[in-house]
Length: 195
Image (cartoon, rainbow, N blue to C red):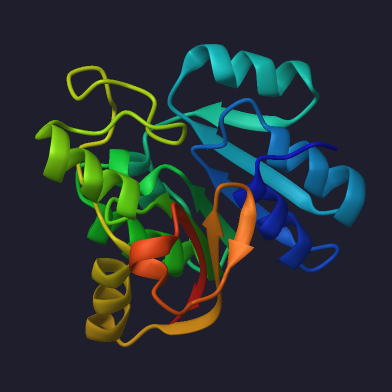
C-alpha cells in the first residue's frame, strides 16, 4: 500500500496485533494498511464527514468526532497506540490533545509539519509572507493550521512534560534525514511518545 511517508514510518513501527486509535484518520489509509499488514484492531476518529464516509466504505471502524472535545470519552489505556498524524497543529489545545492521547494509548505517535524548516524561514525572510509549500499547500487564510510548531518547540514540550521519546524520525521531502539540525533541515517530524 502506498502511504504518505510519515504514515509509512508509523505503520512500520506499530506492533503486529496491536489495538490502535487513529485520531484525525482522514480516509483511513493508515488504518487499512495496519489492518492488512499488521493485523491490528484499528479504530478511527475523524472530523470531516466525507473522510468518515470514505473510511467506512473501506470497511473500517471510524466515527465522526473532534480531537479537541471527544477524546475524553475514551477510557484510559484502551489502546496500545494512539496516533495523531498531521493533526496536532489544527487542534485548539494541542497540549490537552496530547495529554488525552497518552491517557488513552500506552504510546502515542505524533507527526507534524516543521514550521522552522529552512524553506519556511526563507519564505518569511525574503518574501515576508506565510509560506506555501508542498507540505503546507494552502494560503494563510485557507489553512486549518492554527498552532504552528517546530521540532525544537515539540522537543521542549516533551522535556517539560517529562515524556519519554521511544522514537523520532525526520523527513526532508519524502526521505529520512538525521536528527542533527532537524529543526532547520526537516520538513516533517514523527515522534513515538510514552509517559
